[in-house]
Image (cartoon, rainbow, N blue to C red):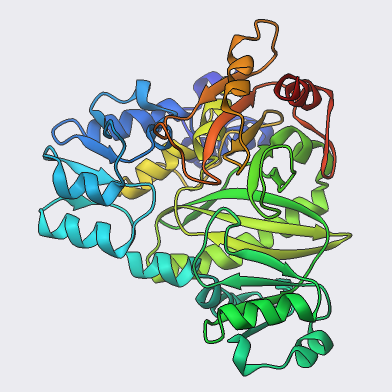
Length: 425
């Protein structure tokens, strides 16, 4: 066959060997995960790659494929900055889940070679107010109507008129839905105003619809889109907070996102990614979208390694040999040159997880029933967060490689119902 004589695309084009489909096949050939893993292992052969973290789960996914990779954590658990400050850190190249001013300062003082992007970029992209101001210049048509103001500086009547009721109030810094609340009426606003009269808030029109999240990696000039997942948010079985993320469902997203939806996600992500690239960002970030009928809105940027990356990477390896998102992240931070202009990530068409968060009234003994259930079709991981996990912290993750957990928007399927029944019996 002609293809046996064609070494590469350049040769095929130069000598006009083979039909057009042969050339197109070579052009579309996917880079494998192993090819990039080999480059990472070569880059780290003399100097190890260190992942320094409070939560070991953040460092997992491809650890068994790497030859000079060390996960540095502690028991009892300490924050990443405290680990950097108090432990003897081996010589090497270090990465963390999310950079901040303290981590960057300690790393510099101790001569630790930190590979993460500068913390100033993290704050610019992720803090709720600066995030909106930055995005307003890039994608104003994809943002909910928003006002930035301290409560004492604006009348409730103006908010009601301009963004309507109910609306969303967010503090500049918060995570896992803890700093987000719904203002339903003037009484809610008065309470907020009395408690935080001078604290700047991001006040946004409440958009109703399905939330989808996508993990993205900037690797030199490439913006690599991961696999969109439906973001399971605020369902009361596993959290007290209405805006807390309690899971991801790639299966549901794969079934319910049309080609038009995917094009919209790609177009918006490319605009954001190109701007971040010009700022010098490299590696992972995450985007949260709301689909309201046929309209798409960006509601959040996570300027760090999103929490679902490790599971997406694990699922990717089980569904094909293409490039995983965690591999791309490490290669980007290590400044490894991409081997081709045709980079794509391994596609996922199924898989899901549920995150059980610490509630005020949490009956921990019931979680043990999940681990002892021998007929389950899922895998449970108890998160090692110490003997007394913080409120709203993830205490258990439940993962399912095939299928998903969501039937319809905000509605569990039969598999999730089984889990809920085990916990309630």
